[in-house]
Image 1 (cartoon, rainbow, N blue to C red):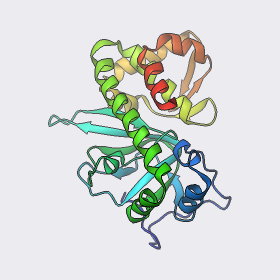
Image 2: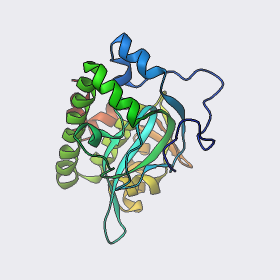
Image 3: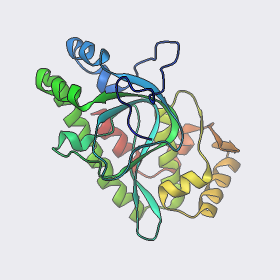
Length: 244
């Protein structure tokens, strides 16, 4: 789905209630910068499977999630896919913009539904020029995202499927409100580059231990501490990078 444009009918309308700004980057801005952005943001829901950007597509907007998960995906010539990194309310889609790039380097797909704010590139450029705090927080996040990308390479090579699945579920849990969210085994197998049977077996083990429950795409985290004990050390490294 193309990025929304101001005034275009294709843009989903915001809900009747004023959407809550939860994105950490936006909330960390100084009052003047925050006011500037709030007047220009287009906030709407994100649906599972929605493509924010195709790989190579020119950026028209920076996208700031408030709830939900967006996956940055890489597709091989064989057709197999794997997630390079994931983005939630701690960040934004379009970090290449801060590094001087104008095109998406990955396909960004909504993995867990939620809502986000779109900011037109011309408005972002104006904010970057006028408010130093905007470039500061976005550059700091971009560095953290690069750390996540590098950590994911090591994680995919060294850690077990169950450890990686637990790590992904923990990151998702951090990015939604509540303990329940929707993701299918097929979707998670695509994200992690695993066979669906491998994901199913790992979830069965976690469910048997009382860590999670799962039914028809709906997963509930019952025992987060046990899930953290199952996950690899990469979870805390990545989470710590975004918190710094």
